[in-house]
Length: 325
Image (cartoon, rainbow, N blue to C red):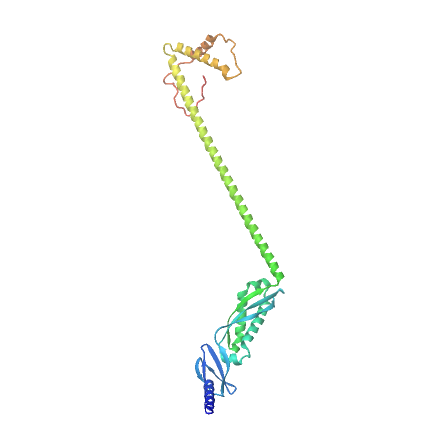
């Protein structure tokens, strides 16, 4: 039993020596080795050998991109408005030696510098400019921190603002302003729509009146042309009838026939006179119908008979005046 204990002790001592001698560094890691308290070298990823009790791993760094949250802070704009700003800072350690000996806490130093730079940049802008200039603020903070972090072995990849929160009173005023602006745009759009509607309506009424006037004009022209043509046809028919009567009067028995026709027409017209009007004009010699007919025949006889050369043409250039019986 007593012989086993020394063996176990030797085994433990050997394991401790082996562990302190052989070190396996993971990928994307960087370990800083000091020998007797002084920087000696940086271990690369993989298997590395150290001298026991002389070399020690003083710092271990992750070389991957590290997102760090920048705490919220109060900034004052150029127009003395307080803003609460927070964000994220994306860092990467590029030099393990500078990160180990350039600053006691390089990550915290980068975050503090990001906060102070943000306060400085916000102080150069008015409230509206600060709210609408996120990209410019991000670039300014990332550039300032990256320039200072070179001595710390850190590369600043980018900075992103998470929130910019104005005071509650400013938020309410902004909401009222946005509401008023939207109502203004709505009223403008409504008035533009009404204006366009009125223009369209007036244009439609104007076109309708033009169409109605054109229709009335065309109707009047067609009506006038029809009436003129009707007058011409009636005049031509009347003239033709007169010529026919005149031609019949010169033959044997024509005067007697004309006398008979005039007497019959006179009696017919006189009989219908009372039916068509309430006012009657009675000749003085009403009983002497033969005298009236004789007067008409005498007018026919005294007119010279038409000759074929002097006979009027059937078609006339202008409208003829209708002759009533």
